[in-house]
Length: 328
Ligand code: NAD
Ligand code: DAU
Image 1 (cartoon, protein in one colour):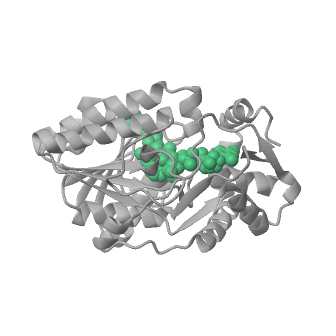
Image 2: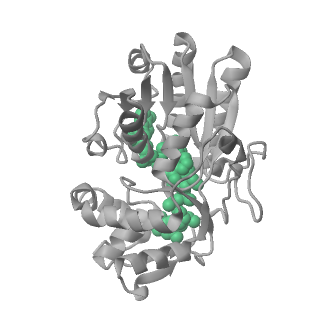
């Protein structure tokens, strides 16, 4: 299959590209704007064609999509804290960018997969969300992702475009930018920096190893029914403080590094996805959280070449703005 992968230089997109080339022999074209989160290094070990451009650019998108059997859209602004501080790019990329991609897919009659998130359902105290749960997003990030999902659905309903939506739970694994909980805590613990836990640390996330999500998206692309939404949730839930303690244990750092800091505004308490529908298609998560977290800690410990340029660049200024303290 020839796939156009938008946002393929980011965390999940680059893992998806690696899985599809390695395990399925697909031909890959990656279109990516290379924001702070998109890096050519993420794809340096995998064969692909690269187009530097944004999904809002109709000309670039049309040319990149030419000859593709399907398009998979990962391109997004993805950090909730950044969406609270500066929402602009979230609106542009998720609303306008998704629209431009859908128009190109419609013109060229290309199957379209939108990579979405459990955050569009909002927070759930007990039980798990199904695909028919109402959308109730909390942050500018999740609200603009929900808007994009609705637009995708409308292109199936109105124009008959073959669309699929995959809503994933919290991913972790190699190549994740260290603004997100797990890589941030691993790198801080390795450096003896403070470990900033928001609020009481009792928020719950449903953890999914990135290669499991990548396989799930590929599975939906190949076996899903057009017009449908598929939840792809991880096998384990954990509070943030449990995650941080497990990282401290794996790194061999000191518990005293934990610092409870001011909570995120509008912080969702718990996410939980029911994934029966994608399981019925034949997908299963293969990695349990305990094992995946250990292997992720090992990956960061062994791949300083990947994170050293990040920790010494603009990220330092971001970190100081976000946490009101410098990195050590
Ligand atoms: P990421 O921030 O690591 O990567 C995003 C990529 O998109 C980067 O390569 C960036 O350069 C690119 N990009 C951003 N704006 C663009 C634009 N306008 N045009 C072209 N490229 C652009 O994100 P990620 O964690 O890999 O997430 C990928 C997708 O998966 C997103 O749609 C996100 O909403 C979704 N998702 C993420 C998670 C998670 O836990 N990380 C869970 C479920 C769903
Ligand atoms: O659920 C899927 C979503 O998961 C994706 O759609 C998003 O793109 C992705 O960023 C992620 O969102 P979260 O807000 O859940 O992830 P984050 O890693 O930012 O935070 C995870 C939890 O950890 C959350 O409860 C906030 C908390 N946290 C986060 C950071 C960065 C801390 O306590 N301290 C921190 O420094």
